[in-house]
Image 1 (cartoon, rainbow, N blue to C red):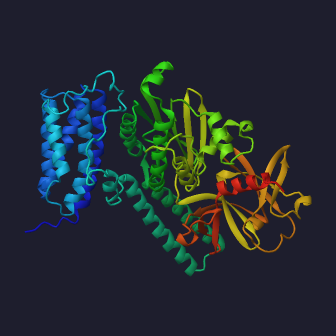
Image 2: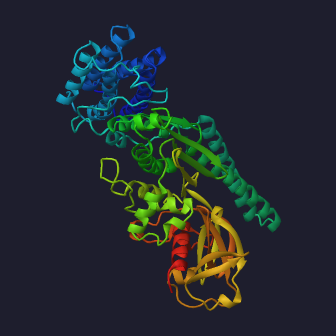
Image 3: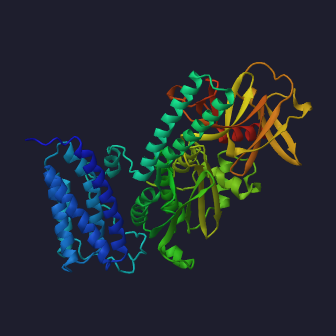
Length: 559
């Protein structure tokens, strides 16, 4: 009888991807510590398990590839082969190949490609002392790396089938492992809500007094908030699996460009909503690529500067209140103020960049098309990477900060909400419409001076002696009419800067469910989402970075 694999395949793919991620981590550790028996055993166990599962399900190509890989690993376990620099790179190529091969096998591919067979032959030759086996051993001075990762040889042969493991990951069905205890508690709360709803309905039918109805409604509200918190907890995932692939990324990029670099990961257990994780990968990728290209020096330059020839890129995460803070720091050359200032003047981004503070000047590297690279390479020179970081993080209602010290390195700090599903907001009114500002961006509220009521557009106020650029939200959005009576200024902050938003009314704090605007509104500046208000009407969530940037730019523009 034929086996129905429709329910088995998603589980098989998820387990294979998890196993291959562990294999990659173990290979990187083994490359740094060739005598690490546990790391080698981990790699062997994954290959053996994958071979058995693939064979049981009838996926012959994946089973065959894993079997050949297992033979090479067996030679290493028995001491009949030495982990050379080239062999370590070939084994990592095998992980990439399996990331493509396994999904392809489940979709019907029934044989290995020529490139996959060539890789297996090369691994066997390296393990037997032939081919490139004369390359440096993994513990030679040139390739010695700390445990977090190294810079050994990347792939030297690749076919279109094997060059896109990331594409293979994208094919995997979205799944999420959850804590069963939290799931059980959520089910209990659902039961309590059902009881509370029935009780409230009965009280209303019996004509219960308003005080009793208010009390029952309060109980239901408490249970609703408890369920909301539990659902949010179910969506939280640790950042460790997000950070770890960059150990491999930095290793390969550094070697390709004649450098040595390792990755140190801190805060692997810090949890964040899975929707934030999905949007964090692209910015992190561009950040580490930029660090390897612009930050980390060549081994010779680092030694001349009195540094370890192997550079370090540190990825760390922590919670700060309701925010996630992710930092990427390198111990490289740091940013060059003169070079950034010269390029800023050349592109017309600043009239007098030398007089700008470090934080303000360094933020210019986030502008579209900005690059200090002298030549275009596969890593940089087109001015795209850090612009992607800024747009990606601001799209998460977050911010990007940059600090650097010459000769000591650069730190990029990303700050974003823990979840995109909800927002703690501050509601304001303009005419008959309501808008929402992220509450964490609101510093204070004050009354607009009467002598500014007739001023349209934007300007600058004095806030306790300090200049505060502001814009009138009504004019910014092109809404007709003028405010009647009192107007208020909401002072907002972003990346250390402050600006004011003039509104007609202050409605106060609120918790809002965030809904996307949809493709119709793509490219519409000033908004980051929408929400359904208590009145049933739609309220737009304001994009603080855009508002602040435009307020500052308009206030600084010549009259």
